[in-house]
Image (cartoon, rainbow, N blue to C red; front, side, top):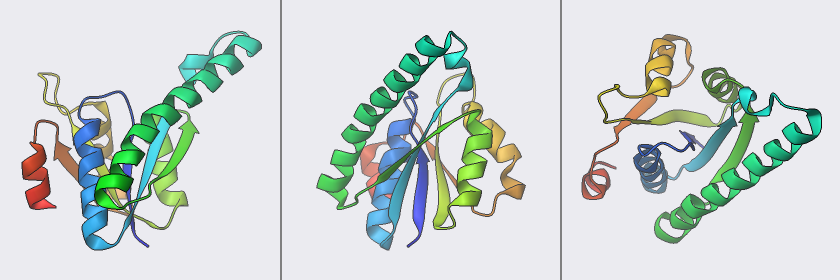
Length: 151
């Protein structure tokens, strides 16, 4: 089965990327894999404190994921899977794409602020020539109705 890989983070544009991935998967018979990355700099503390912070990050990610997963199951009939990796975001995304051969499309949400589309979109488009799959960039301010119309 072809899977749409979408990144779960705290950005506002993440919502549209999740919607797009779920709707496309539902319409094409695919699946959704949600990747969340814990940056390494969050754990540069004493060993015990670092482990506690790591576990708290994983719990927060799981709760955040469940909100999206419930919507995907209830509205789109898609049962997404969650993958949590630790490291630098771009390197971990590239590694996940290369390791999971079922991933067919990387879906990213583009920011709408004056700072540009966001660091992930900027960095991954620079590396897009070396990816084995296409990238779909979903505008962060696209309406839910427009997303439904194009998926």
